[in-house]
Length: 64
Image (cartoon, rainbow, N blue to C red; front, side, top):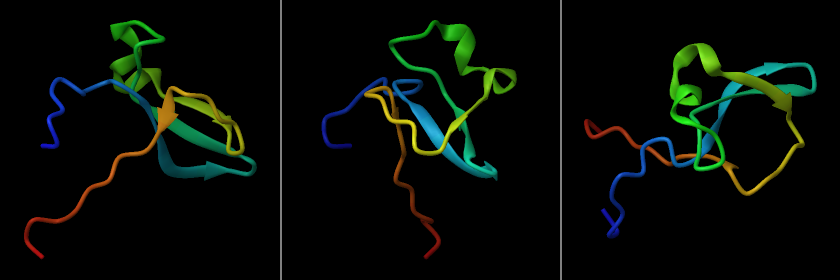
């Protein structure tokens, strides 16, 4: 686990969904309250937008 604990909602995540120059983000972060971690709180942001609280998560399939 790399020594990380309780990281759920620690960062907004870029999702694969795109709408022109905009990208969908989901999650929440220390910058926003817990209400932003709900599915209905996803937000469209410019795909070239960058701030310290938006990132991505690395994942892999355990079956592989």
